[in-house]
Amino acid sequence: MTAPQDPFAAPDSGGVPQQGYGQPPQQGQTPGYGTPPPFGQPDPNLTPYGQAPSTGWQGPPLASWGTRAGGYLIDFVISLVVQVVLGLIDPNLGQVAGFAVFLYFGYLTGTTGQTPGRKAVGIKVLREADGQPLGPGAGIGRAFLHIVDAIPLLLGFLWPIWDAKKQTFADKIIKSVVIKL
Image (tube, one colour):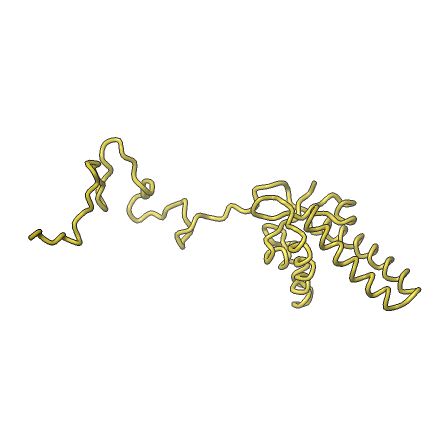
C-alpha cells in the first residue's frame, strides 16, 4: 500500500528551484512583482486602492469646448435649414427629414468621426481606447445619449469645460474623445 500524498506539500518542480513566499529571490531570479517600497512608504506606482494611476489621454490634443460648440452649431444650422425647407412642403416631411439628418450625422460620427460642422472646425470623434472611429452603431448611440447631457440642466454639455479629457457624459458612456486635427 502506498502512503497518502500530503495535500500541503510543495508540488514537484522538476528540479527547478522554487522561490517561497516572503523569501528573497535566488541568484539570477527576479522577483515576480517588482521590488516593494521601503517599509511604511507608499508605492509611488499605485493609487491608494492598489491600482495603477490613470495617465489620462495619451493621443492627439483634445478639442476645446468652444471648438466643439462651433462644430455643433454648424451641424444644427444645416439640420435646421433642411427641416425648414422640407417643412414648407409638408410639416411632417420636415420632421422626418430633421430626424434623418440627425441619424445621418450620428452615422458619420461613427464611421469617419466627422460631421460637416466638425470637419469645418477641424475636430474628430474617436474611441478613447485605440483612437479609431466609433463604428456606426456607437456613433448613432452617442447622438441619442446626448439626452443624458441635457437632462441635468444641460450640465453634460458644459462638462468638457473642466473635465480632464474634455468629455460630455455621452462621451464618457461611449468612451470617446474629441480631438483637434
